[in-house]
Length: 79
Image (cartoon, rainbow, N blue to C red):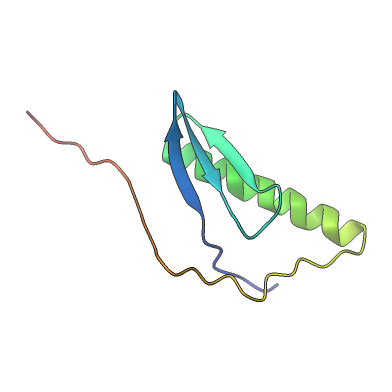
């Protein structure tokens, strides 16, 4: 099995976090926390890859480079 590092984005939209992998069509998921959205996205990507393998379609992920990287998360701050 080949392991790829897939760039993802996580954004807060109204009352949920949305995780997306822009290099894989249909790869997005939501969750109450960024971590939950990412976990769900991993499951979605696995399903997409399994489906594409079943129908004999390759997952063209030869170039998944991004020009910028942005990570947004939260940390606890006592006030």
